[in-house]
Length: 176
Image (cartoon, rainbow, N blue to C red; front, side, top):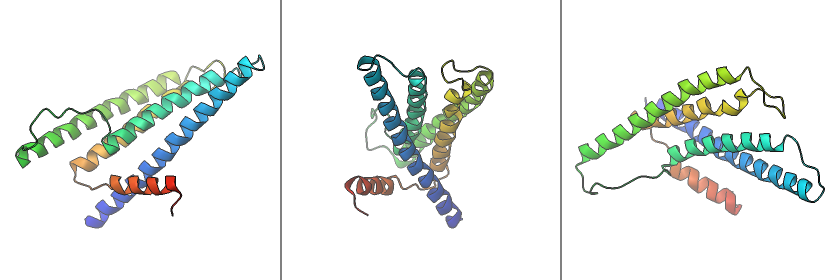
């Protein structure tokens, strides 16, 4: 059983790390695209017709990937109104309640995200002529990532968020 939990944890950590890099790529691409379009519009007097549509797509995808990363790393706003010296059982109950609410929200995101993708698949974005569902496809993807993190917490599967932070800090410094 421990090897199954370890394999799940390793797989989810790889997915999480991939999500971080994917979010970085989306943010850099959006920034470069907007910069090029502003340069072309104000310096060369001609812009890229599809740039605003693609920038919006990149921003939406980045936002939802970042939301899933925030759930994994516990970066969202939280209030600490209760004393820190709560009984262990009460603290565990609150953590379970948090995870259950997170899972419930992820399920709603997933179900309604799939419906939104279905509904918008018949319309196209005007500049790129891509299906509008591409914009909303990130909803069920991020909902899956959020739900998997909540389920890992509920079932007591340890993640290695600290190890991922250490790995990313080493990458940023150029260490191997």
